[in-house]
Image (tube, rainbow, N blue to C red; front, side):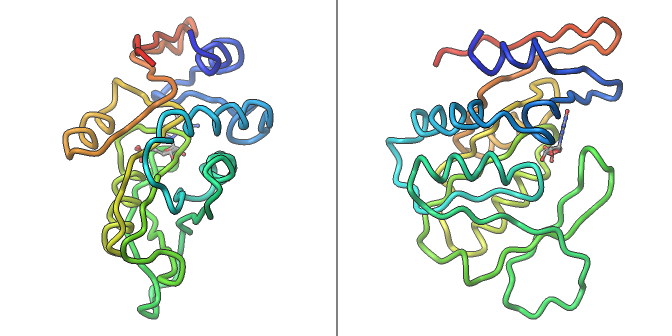
Length: 195
Ligand code: 5GP
């Protein structure tokens, strides 16, 4: 098991409805030493690529993406959830359905902060059905940016997102892939990965 899988086994809680709770170390309270390690691990996996910007979606991607951006020495931009319908044309927009909240949000990135020809690394905490990633990819591509890869902290391999995004040809790296989890007895099964 890698450092993250060990932490998930120790502190993750399997909830009914295919939800893994990791709010004691990842997306509510954050273990900063772990964040640094996650940042270094994504640098190791994507360091051979030219990255000019790290991109994520609010809220829980922000903390993680900040540590990744620090490793690459580039800015981080996050897509904001927006309720306003009168977007003024200064924004790239995508619609994202939330896996955890079951609602749809428009997410926006200002055109000022994403330019044609940029090399983007997309980061998020979870990959489930892939809606968040697809929204971010669509925003990056509407800007004329190149999506160099997607770095995911925890992929739920029993949901379709990972397969869909990889089949579209994107380079997805997940630090932990959960292939099965059981809310009744709390067991979590990870996919073997060679990294
Ligand atoms: P997707 O768009 O791939 O269906 O879901 C990804 C988003 O939903 C992530 O940004 C994450 O915030 C949230 N999410 C999906 N599954 C889980 C989960 O099992 N636990 C937590 N805490 N968040 C999740």
